[in-house]
Length: 110
Image (cartoon, rainbow, N blue to C red; front, top):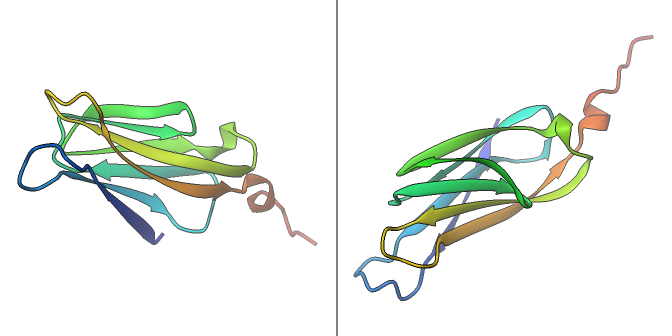
């Protein structure tokens, strides 16, 4: 399944190159279990679907599985946060996705 990556830079962190967080999610309407990934030069990465933590782990790359059958069909915001030691604010990237399990479960047997 094709993926889309979204980059967001943290301004003013004091380094020559501001860190970026790449967030990868499947494109199109999501159904079933999907993989969401985030990467960047971070000690810890946390991935959310709206306010629910899908997972967290050590950087520089982390992925989490999301069972979309546990939520209602609709629009959700997937957010990745990257944490750098000594920085008070995380670097964030987010993208909206649509979940549509009801349509995916339609049986067309005749």
